[in-house]
Length: 193
Image (cartoon, one colour):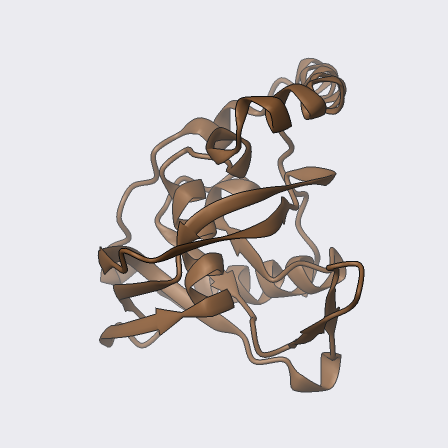
């Protein structure tokens, strides 16, 4: 499957609210899009990728937390390609979250090479549909809950940098401005994108 271009910080589509999917949209071409999203996510060394990160404004994302085997001493996630297990979430929503939260380092494929600690609930009760349009409701926790919340934020037009401290945001300001400038230049040179 072909890889897709990932939209970067400053692209207006990243701030758009995604619309719910209809069952009729989940056809063969949609399944091919999911396969391309997965290929894109893996090639970029990500653990999740939301629809608006590839220019879609529909409510779905892909993720793979099984590939993450550990954190190394520098806090970087170690991934094992042999353990891949793609998860597909259509019309995802959070029904409730734990009171307990925790900080962990997050990054984003739309904000390359930047990371910061983000506080998120450690558990969440979620509902979503799979590719066969079956509805699921379950409690998830740990990295799974964090990735779900991060990707769901994308579908609501929220980026992880919106959830970090003012000091962390100030530390990243130069990099964010550089990415935003590059994005503006790219959008100006490809107006039909």
